[in-house]
Image (cartoon, rainbow, N blue to C red; front, side):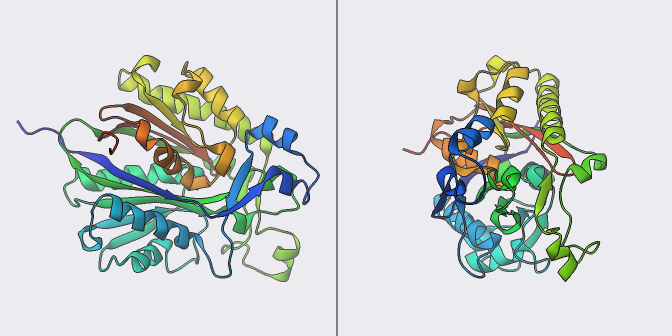
Amino acid sequence: MQNKISAAITGVSGYVPEYVLTNEELEKLVETNDEWITSRTGIKERRILKGEGQGTSVMAAKAVSDLLAKTNTKPEEIDLVICATVTPDYFFPSASNLICKAVGIRETASFDLAAACSGFLNALATGAVFIESGRYKKVIVVGADKMSAIVDYTDRTTCILFGDGAGAVLLEPNDEGVGVQDFILKSDGEGCESLMQKGGGSAYPPTHETIDQKLHYIRQEGQSVFKFAVTRMADISAEIMERNQLTGEDVRFLVPHQANKRIIDATASRMNIGEEKVMLNIQKYGNTTAATIPLCLWDYENQLKKGDNLILAAFGGGFTWASAYVKWAYDPKK
């Protein structure tokens, strides 16, 4: 009897811009200070992509180019590229088109996916299903956002939180019991007003009025988002653990969306997972939206071993929330 085919992550890469925006520098822009930001968010600094005409795809292409090199994969071998983002360079062509152009991937399937901070997990699940179906053999899943493009640097409730970055993974078929084992994706449009960028789309296209009203910047209701995030991210993680008969002892790492350290701590506590088992890099990157989870995998790659159980969890605007159970597919490279 043939073993079940799953989609294994066979490589991971990331990219963050060189420019570092520290809490001390934000003190010069808005009424805040390092202690206030750190105690409430856990963030010390974030990366910002500078330069005219430099969009999300620039960071994503760097991550993908490095991924291809690390995995000894030729551009022509790639069957599909999915880019999760809410800050594409343009409405069209898609960021995935621009990524493919930049790294030399030609005549392959590609598309963008938007699910806010849950975007990477939605894209990972989509890529996994394509692999499991037997349709594709090599799928690249990207999470990338240039949040600095939609942040109001006079609004201290949001400008302290967000940064820019990109992460990418390669998915390939595997019949050894490793890879994406399960996922749960959920959304509820009732929360759409709590976290959104109102201007710029077809409902409120750019005008002098929308610009004056700052509708093109991200806005959030902090308390309602916090309560939702802690509850839903913990619940959906517990749900995927329960239906796969996993306990906290079985989990090597919780890989949470990096939105706020207080949210991460509360989620881990509700799941009875100690802080030594929680991937954390929010202190140096801030919230990079769709890029947070792949950037965590990139940062922690050398601490992972084949067979390690990972629980990936995220929440975002929409509201959206998601979890995935991944059994890691390879040992650290020596």
